[in-house]
Amino acid sequence: MTVHVLFVCLGNICRSPMAEAVFRHLVEEAGLGEQIVVDSAGTSDYHIGERAHSGTRTVLRANGIEYDGRARQITPADFERFDYILAMDNDNLADLRRMAPPQTRAVIARFLDFADGVSSREVPDPYYYGQAEFEYVYRLVRRGAEALLAHIRAERGL
Image (cartoon, rainbow, N blue to C red):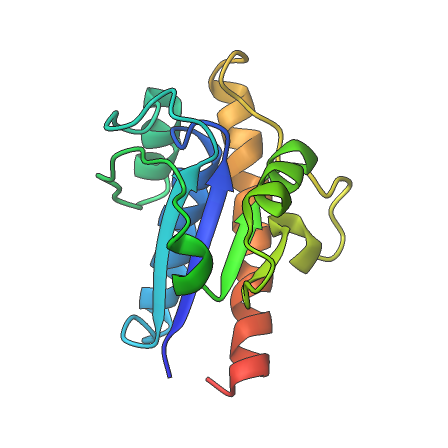
């Protein structure tokens, strides 16, 4: 059984592609690439087709993680395809819950709800704040990704 995980932020150029790349990296390191499918999307159409923000790409490269995805907007089909749809903040979570069809089987939650010992349940948007904020976001995303992978492995027996 394949587990499908979707990370969501507003524009799909900063936080959600970072989470996608970090989580995919951990999944591959664990040898679970065939069992866990990873993607990201935005709730808005602001950046469709654009590369991830240079701050995201820089921090990923600095941590040995490659990413070449392009921004896309979440679609109704995503609510059928994905098992986990994980929002980066409360606004994204509210948007996702509004968009979700009543019969969706997906777990819709904040990404950091899976992480213990973090000071916030929201991943802040680093878009306007410079490289130091992208590095802080990377640390949060890394903790969240490790916790999420542990949760999925325990829940699915992987």
